[in-house]
Length: 169
Image 1 (cartoon, rainbow, N blue to C red):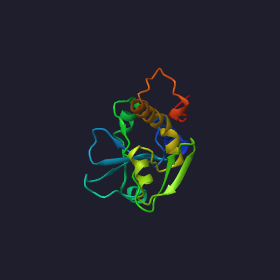
Image 2 (cartoon, one colour):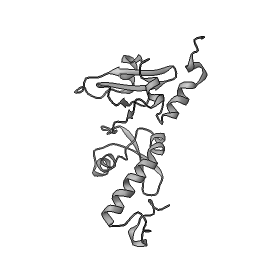
Image 3 (spheres, rainbow, N blue to C red):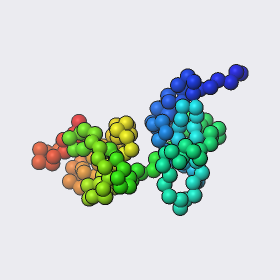
Image 4 (tube, one colour):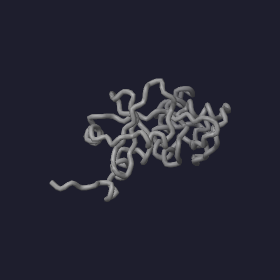
């Protein structure tokens, strides 16, 4: 079989998209300790990181990364599971979130109550694309918590005073 450079054909972007991962978006693989992964045009890359090491920037990760030939097949076959670390920016990082008007907004992190509320709710993302990819899971998580707190069963339609427009279909 001839060697084919998948990166030259745009395949790695398609593979990353299939796995719901953005290009150069860091992630972990369950069961693979102290390693962060990301997709690039020419393959899956891995960076070894000590558990207590400070978070690396993407530029630092790219400098230290090595092409990983061990885990891609496991990811594609479902034998390995991707684990996304929650993103908590540091000042003055820019982050994106879904607002209650169902639009994607962005702002600089300044450590305000609103910043920490977005992070605690899992509504804090590196890119607009991540928000849109994570929107169904985030909406379902918030819908369940809201309905439970308000005593609304899954079969019940919310009342007008419940202000649940974000969660009503």
